[in-house]
Length: 150
Image (cartoon, rainbow, N blue to C red):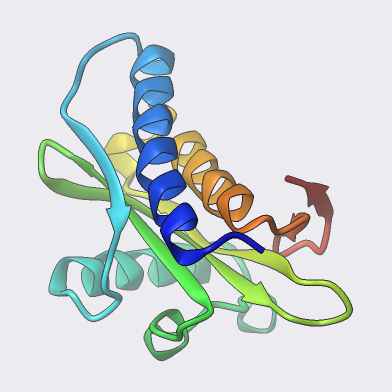
């Protein structure tokens, strides 16, 4: 396991790489930043509410396993926001689970409608991947239960 200082250094180093990759994918130099967010921040709460409404319009209640704001605040969760021109445009989280072998569970990936198609989800997933890599977690899973090596 890496020291906290090593993880912090990798965190900032890899975040810059994700932002650069996103800008290359989009083909422009828009003002985009991905950073850890507080789930209680009003802009984040609003984005989560919009994500809940969207998921509810697509799936029946028994198929929606949405993490609550309280769950997103726990110490085993890293919750990221993607800001475009200082507007919160997307989010995504990873919950570290300590079962037989630690792994990350991807949660709450959502992009506002007006920002879809611009690789923001890819940038969020890249940031989650960097976070898991810095922590040396070996794999992650999504809501459908598929495991992927990191």
